[in-house]
Image (tube, rainbow, N blue to C red; front, side):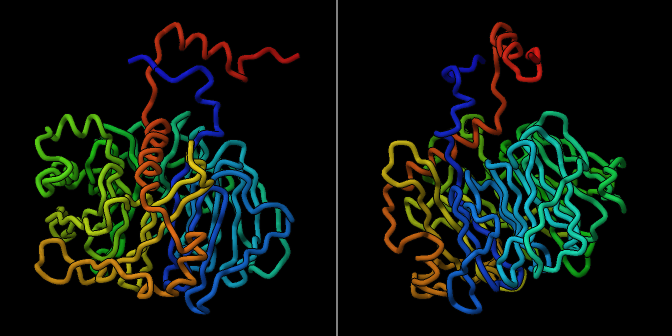
Amino acid sequence: MEDTQPEGGENNRDVEVAPALISVHPTQDSVAVAVGSDLRVFDLRGNCGVTLVDETGEAFHKDSIRAIRYGAKGKLFVSAGDDKLVKVWSTDSWRCIASVCSEKRVSAVAISNDGLYVCFADKFGVVWVVDLHGLDGNETLVNKKAAPLLAHYCSIITSLEFSPDGWFIVTADRDFKIRVTVFPKKPLDGAHEIQSFCLGHTEFVSCLAFLVTVDYPQGFLVSGSGDSTVRLWDVNSGILLDTCEVGSKAVMLLQWPFKGMSPNILLAFEHFSVLLLFHYLTAYLFCSSFQGILLVSCDLSSQTFGAVKVVSNMGDSFIPTSLGCSSSAELLWTITGVSKLHGSDHNSLACVRVLSGFKKTIPDAAGPELTVLDDNEVPGAEKLLEKLQGSLTVEEEVFLAAAEAVKTSMCNLLIKKQYTTEKREFRKRGRNDKKTKQ
């Protein structure tokens, strides 16, 4: 299949849209949202917006933020993106305590469970590690240098996860691979021991998460992919334990908009991208072409997926671009939004919705459903929404166009373009590393 993009389309970054992101503090002390280059934080304990402090004196980020994340203990927060900056924030003071300049644009971030290391992946497939020893959040800004940890060799890394015990760092890429690497005692010297590969996806792997219970503290790895499946893995051996065909189940559960369409044709055309968030034994998933959330139960004792349930009461124009939840609360935080929407008067759009009944909901049970909270029922109410959305009034009709733009942008990023031999040779001649230095 020949690439149909206009010449120079790959470098025309000013029309690259970025999805809005949301992340929730582990104990729901705060909620953070990224829309374009804007980073917005609301303090749920103090019921007020947070003023970020960055001693560089410049804008916090100069281009779209592609990854945000709280550490497991909630003491650290990391933001990174297309401006090649990785910023580490103390959540006590919301001061930027470390800033790292990446060689390439950043696609994913992770924080070690002990909070001593930050890892980030760039668009060239390299994972870098930053040592945070000695940073307590009270000192002035420190410019840190990153060391290469491992590489996927020219494949965009889409997700990074530390295992619950901290023994492994797991990486996924757009070439269908999941790699489990032993996280070394001296990370700055590189990670050279591969524990396993989890192979089986037939499209890009879009997300990773560990499912952990008291009985299974080591956790099981779950992955979502553009092949419309969610898969359960044993990371020690790389063995596939079970597969949930999310796309086909959604077709069976929903009469609209899939009625009359073949699941295979639909999946091949739409390239569902699944975002995961796990809490106890329930998996919450968002499919990029679907207005709602899918809930998938998982029985770790039998190491199998169970029933699938659809939550589609979020509104016709609300197609989530990101999900978030704390480890202790029963609220599921969702956001839809986009930055740099071509042809729109809005530079950035964001709408936050919160669902209750998170812990109580079990897909195959007839019990409580997830309920979308009214604006005045959301923690922080209008103050929170105004801070995170940028305004209280949201033009809903714009969000369908925004969601379509995000889907197109992410497909362009994650689905490899196919070139003719002639065009491939032309592109090689134009590569910077092939040009003769003067």
